[in-house]
Length: 197
Image (cartoon, rainbow, N blue to C red; front, side, top):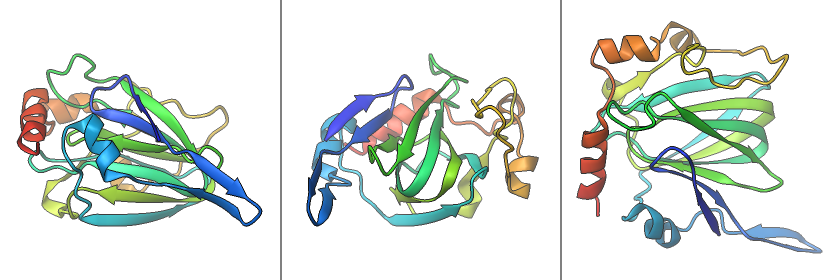
């Protein structure tokens, strides 16, 4: 597996080695030991989510309160997606910036994002995504930022008409969330991750 750190600290693109043969293809989709070499601790998978989306669907920007928040390992099972990681950690040197990775069934790349980062999944082609999560869903700790925030400026493809949930449509901007004290601090995120080692 190839682990490539993204421009947002705490996020990686993970591309497996694929082994095709006359029957099809085999690849390791997740290796806790290999991931731990990069993140400094073993990711305990406490919940998996399956998300089926039609082209145009935009999910996020989602995050969870720290602690414990929720680290995610996301890959495409079918179709194609643009996975966008947004740094929403107050005090981070890349606060308000994003990086993105295409998820599809050709390269079979996955994205890992650590606790406290914002996540947005943009469906480019009807498909299904699989999420491995380090914590179970906690409605009280769930937060969101509108993916249409012009200051974040997530890159929607030309001619793309986003389809959002009511919750994501009503979510605050990054500036509003910061003013309301809803964003995690960079220091708290790093401290929590150190406690997992």
